[in-house]
Amino acid sequence: MFDKKQEKIKKHFDIYIDGKKFKIMNFFITETPDKWLRLVTKIRGQQFPRKTVAEIIITTPDDNISLHGCFMHNVSSPACEEWCYEIV
Image 1: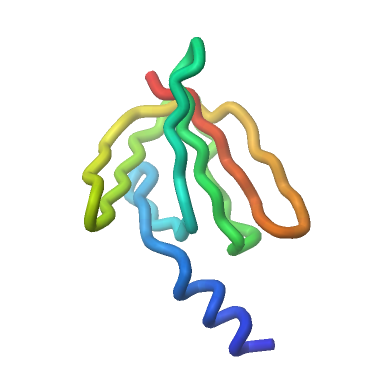
Image 2 (image 1 turned 120 degrees about the horizontal axis):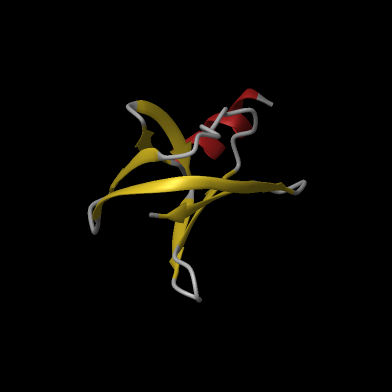
């Protein structure tokens, strides 16, 4: 079981929300009438901020994104958790 957890963690990268580190597997920015940031993780139990406005910083080899978002909702399935923020 421990090896599966380590393999799962290796597929994630760090982001920062209000200075606190979180691990996500992927993110999507959608621009259908409103702009949304969707964060996808397989690591359960992370307490993503449910604040009115949060500063979100995502740094990958390809992207350097800094934005402010309002928490909207989260969706949980057996495979992953998805956290959504409206970009403000």
